[in-house]
Image 1 (cartoon, rainbow, N blue to C red):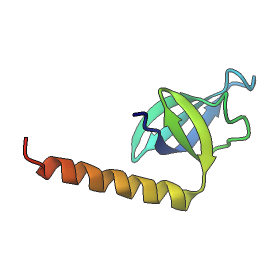
Image 2: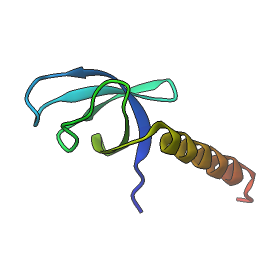
Image 3: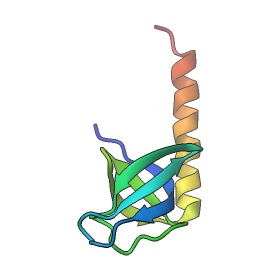
Length: 82
């Protein structure tokens, strides 16, 4: 199973659409992601990131809902018997 995580674009570097990179915040954790698949993305946009690539832009509400669900899943896994 693959999982893409939503994050907010903080900063973009590079001008070539194939080599543009972004600093993306995942709840305060900053990581680099390629914007090759989302050339229209800009700072402040939310993107789904998997394996270092932003795959698509999403709206802020969808990003927040997804993050809440991931937090709930993490809490449920913490309480699960081993």
